Image 1 (tube, protein in one colour):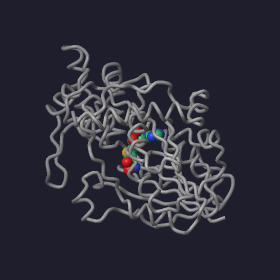
Image 2: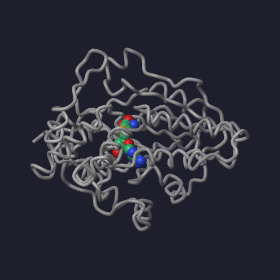
Image 3: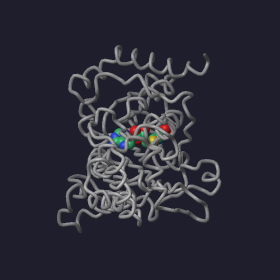
Length: 359
Ligand code: SAH
């Protein structure tokens, strides 16, 4: 059937790619990437994903001619931004695409096949960016992109459990080799810890009510293992509107669980520190965030990098980089136009910040 073709093609391509690619083999041996791709749960048909702020990302990253430029797309997803970068740069420039989701890597491989000589794809976590660059023999790169969050492929696949509007297992792991799913969190955390998690990562004001409803349900009815079951439990105690529009009451609870399952904020903090240390002079790091928790991390990290002399050392991942001088390219984050938001719902809360290494 025609509908099955993209799915089959993308797995066949992936298998071929893994067998024929020496650097991919080297990474596998070092355990930087997982051994076997899962062969289930691929959305069918594969949804369309519109990358956000593409023009803005290109003007930030591809801003001067350089025939040997190397770009790192740390969240290659469905390959939208990587494709745009490859198209906008000279045929001697290359892109390394990283994603912790093997299905994304497989899909990006298919989409970016026309540029196969210029693209390398790595299944791995952004947090390990320095290690990955090291394995690929890259000591410096000219442009780095981080586009946080989930892709349309993840969001619209009921099997992945990311969406509160689709029925599926309560999973939410971007990398399926992670051991803890959203169901594990929901069914094992104490009520108070669950409330704190939902409050902190979901910024859900009704977190205590939600946690109490979850615990009541699991004590009376047994473990919560499906997305629709959780959505229903949350919907009974939360009513939500955003700018006059009704949004799904469980949106914030699902966001909290997704962040916790994938340690998204920890990944971002560590990954940004690694990314900054990889920038060549004149190189730029562009980060697109989708909620205030992410944007706060990006802002603080960039501020620490841009003011190394003021800081007396910084805290943890926000310690200023050891070499180079950096500036924030824009005072305020760049946001999508109304027209882009109307065209692409995912753009609604996007914010782009860019850091440049000037010395
Ligand atoms: N820019 C992409 C879309 C990215 S969607 C495009 O244009 O198609 C975000 C992607 O980031 C998802 O595929 C998700 O799996 C990946 N991701 C999220 N956190 C990650 C991390 N810490 N390391 C690597 N990939 C990550």
